[in-house]
Length: 304
Image (tube, rainbow, N blue to C red; front, side, top):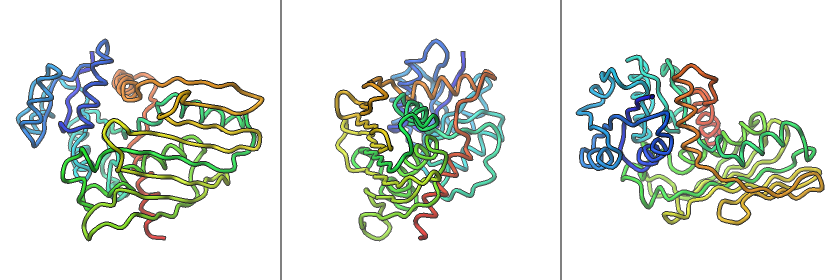
């Protein structure tokens, strides 16, 4: 049984704790630490974990093998590096860094990019690799979250969160890079926000390395419970459509394939992959370098 400690007690920490409960045969959340003691106590009580008095106390617990970092974005790299230096394996929420250049994280650190574990994304990657529908012409992908409505006040600070462009954009960019072999370039546009405030909406356009045109939408403006992922991939011999708000969710329009729908909790799959990595089994998790590369793509887009 893998014993996990969670740094943070907000929405993502709670989602991870719930995912761990769904994977209770292999992992257990043993301890929670947060700078907000009331949130830590509430989450620990809900999942039957103890509360660590400090981050150092979480790291010094010999029974804990893996650390999940779910604190504000501007603390990710520092805490991940500290946990790795303490000999812990780390799964860090993305963005793992605000700059894409934190080369000192090191150790056994992986980036949380759970969209990779969605069966629809896995299917899309297989179709793209085998070119089952011919050459890909355009890729449209949208991610909608409710972060600006339910997240802590730090979300609204551009210097701490990076706004929807970075917070959501790294997941969109990584999904495309994962499925289609990389991104050649991106150009970003954000909805205007007051000085110092994070923009809640952004668009990215560009080109994948295989030549496909990209259109990525990143939103924090959804209502709680209405978060979504959707994509539309136009190929020479067919169209792949997915929208988590619709039924069936995944539709492949082609004489070569049929319709399918198979949603599963991707965070549970990610937690199980983390447990496998800690047990020395095949490593399916993206490295922190993958996460940093996605941040670098978004940062480069901002400079164009």
